[in-house]
Structure formats: C-alpha cells, structure tokens
Length: 95
Image (cartoon, rainbow, N blue to C red):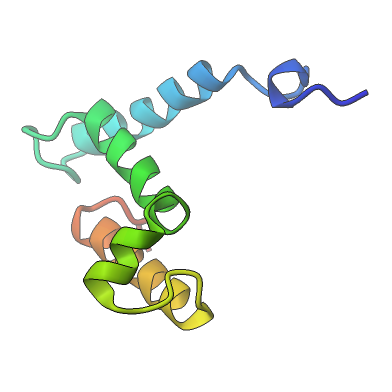
C-alpha cells in the first residue's frame, strides 16, 4: 500500500529535498550567478510559492489579470514569465 512520498525509500524526506534546493541556489550564488544580498532559503520559498500561485491564488490572478487562471493560454503565459524571471535572476541552466 502506498502511503505517500515520505514513506518511499527511494525518496529523501521533504525537508532534505528542500534543503537540497536551497543548496543548489547557494551554489549558483557562490558562482556569481545570483546577487549576494539574496537569501537562498527565502528565494527558494518564493519560487515554490510562484509555482503554486495558479492553484493557491486563482482569485488574485483573476482580479489582477482579468483572466481565467486555469486557462491554457494564461498557464502558458505565466510559465513563460516565470522562466523569464528565473533567467533574469541567473537561475537558468548555463547554455
């Protein structure tokens, strides 16, 4: 019986995965790809919240943007904007 990802032996505990994400951001910062004044832990939380916004804040999106937050058009546009911001922050993959 599946009891969730926390019980899966192939997956690290959620807190460990989140700390790993923070360390990835910290590594990018050490490489000069992110300003020193940005807190990697806070940025990780902000990016998680950004990823969840269409689900957790549909009323805000509808009020601010005047669109259906679950429409394919908006979801595509929002994803492009998130990608743009992460690129501008220096969090994109070097290419």
